[in-house]
Length: 163
Image 1: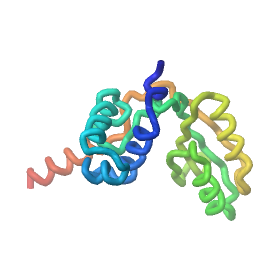
Image 2: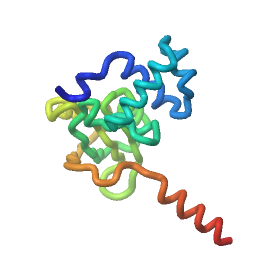
Image 3: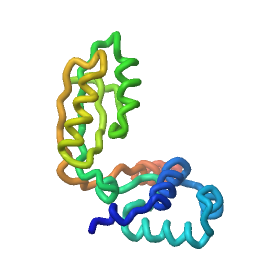
Image 4: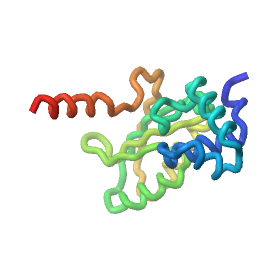
């Protein structure tokens, strides 16, 4: 049995609130979710131990949530329709982030899916957005370095200490 199948409604609501506000205190979360403080605290500890919730409190392990497929999609867009395309991408729940880019293509997005069929459905939704000309999709095989900002902050702190 995968960990995702062990997540109940309370776990999912707790994760959602932590993503919305990673600095939320356990007492706030317990009040918001209508559970005892100890219940909220033990659930958070369990999610951290299982690495479903990463140390930052905002980043989640997508695979632990059942989203085993991550893809990077480059989209060529009719420039007059760029704003509409971005608005359309915002409505697709599997789209995690969107960037306007230079080079080949106009927009880049990261998409999460439960399997290749779910990814195909997401890509078809992207292609149905008015203004999308074509897409190119690359699958992520393994995450070696998760999104991070610590090295940047460490470098800035070191420079600041040196001056």
